[in-house]
Image (cartoon, rainbow over all chains, first blue to last red; front, side, top):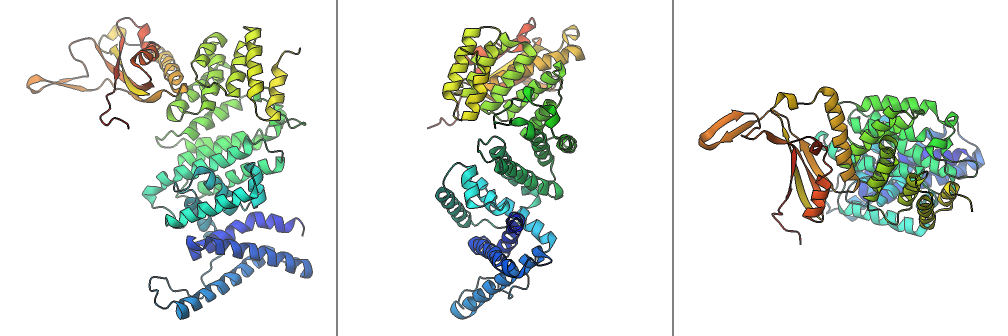
Length: 406
Length: 118
C-alpha cells in the first residue's frame, strides 16, 4: 500500500479534479482540488485499517463522487434557502450527474488542458498549473523542478487560478475553427514542460524523467483525440520521442552530461526511436510546417549514427528554416555547429562571430570547439570564458574535459 | 532596429541564363545558408520567393504576361531584415548568393514606418 497510494495519486488525482472542476465550473477549482485531496486522505486512513479494496480506482471514484454530492447538496441548500434571489445559477440536480466514465474523464482532461494553457496567464504559471492539475505533482515536486520554494509555487498557483477566474475562462473545447489557434499555447506548454525535465539540472533523476513522460502523455492525449490530432501535434510528439530515446545515454554514472557524439548508442531506446519515426510520418500532412516539424526532423537526423555529409546538410537546412520561423539563441548556436560540419571550421568561425551572444557560456563553448585544431590558445581562451560563465557543476565538468590539462 | 527590404533581381528571361534543376538545388542551399545566417543573428523579419508567372500593367491599361518590364532583370524574391542602419543592412545583403551571377543585383530599401513607434 505504501507505493499504491502515491501511484494512484499521480494517475487519478488529475482525473478527479478535471471531472469535478468541469462539473462545478472553474470558479470552484479549489473545491475540486480539495475534494480530490480529501478522497486520497480518506483512502489512506481507511485502507490502512481495512486493507486495500478489490477495485481501488473504483473505490476512489465512488468516494470522490459522494464527497462531491455532499458539496453540491450544501450548495443547493445555500442556493435555495439562503440566496433565493440569485436567478442566473444553473440548478443543481443533487449531483447525480457526476460522470466518471472513461470518456468523460478524457474529455474533461483535454478541456482542462485548454483552460490552463490560456494565454491570459504566463507560460511559467501554465506549466506550474499543468504540473499540479494535469500531472498530479505535489507542491514540493513542482518547487524542486523550478528550483524554488513551496511558498513561491503556492503563490504562483493561487495567482494563476485567480487570473483564469477573472478572465472567465470556461472548461470547454474551443470551437473547431479555434482549435488550431488555441493549440499553439497548449503545445508550447507541453514543450516547455518536456524541456524542464530534459534540460533540468535537478539532482532528482526520477523527477526529471517524470516531467518528460508527463509531457509525452499529455501530447499523446491530443494525438488520440480526432479534434486535436493535427500535424504539429504529431510533430511535437515525434520530437519528444526522439529526445527521450537518448535519456539513458545523456548522463554518465557520475551524473555528468554526455554529448551526443560520445553517447553509448547501445543505451538509446530503439522503441522510442521508431515511435518518433511513426509520429514524424504522421506529421507530414497538409501544408503547415511548424517549428516542431523542423525540430523533430533535426532530432531524427541525430539518430543517424554515421557522420554522413547528407546528415549534416539536412540538419543545417532544418536549422536555417527553423530560425526563420522561430529564433532562439540555442538554435542559432546549433545551426553554426551544423554549418561547421558542412562548410568547415574557418567559415563557421566567421558565422559564429556575427552572433551577438556574449556572456553565453554555450557560445564560448562553441567558439572553443571551432578554434580547436585551428588556434589552440584562442580555443583555450574561449573554454576559460565558458567555464567562468557556466552556472552548474555538471556543465563545468563537461567544459573542463575539453580543456588542455595544465 | 529598422526594417529593410532586400529585392533580389535576376534575369528571368534569357533561356541560357536559367539554372538546371541540379544547379537550382545548389543555389537553394546557398540561399538558405545566407538567410539562415541572417536569421541566426535574429535579423530576419520575413520574405518570399516569387513565381515567374505574372502580369505587368502599364500606361493606357496595357497588360503583358510575365513580371518583366523592359530590362532583363526582374524581381525574383525579397526578404525583410532588421538592421541598425542602411550600412548594416547593405552588409547583410552583400552575402546574397545571387550576386555570384553576372548581371544580377540586390536592392536594399528602408521600409518607412507609417506609424512611428513611440
